[in-house]
Length: 154
Image (cartoon, rainbow, N blue to C red):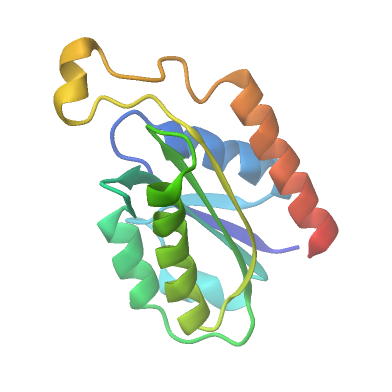
């Protein structure tokens, strides 16, 4: 299956690590949102969109990219993220916001994935951050398992 993974990973490369692991399982091309060419999406059968969660939202650059994509007809997609906190109401909103944008563009969503990532945003940098060592080996295995389930369901 022809797959592309587009990600935003700015501070500690947490999301980039997850993107590459999912990409390995899916034999996908993995590219930063700032380097993707919109015409690359034409031949793609499955697209992954991933980001760190910044103030309860996916990265603004990734959101802008998706909002400026042409409409598609039921192209399959999934989303993934890393964040400083476990999946909760705020994080669910960030995923729901991206899902809504993708659905409006005509994508068929196949699932989502989240794991903790090392975070030093704002005042928590003064205590050395949170979630050191994340994403962990266990997180990476969970991401691989998510990718394997995508293969089964696509």
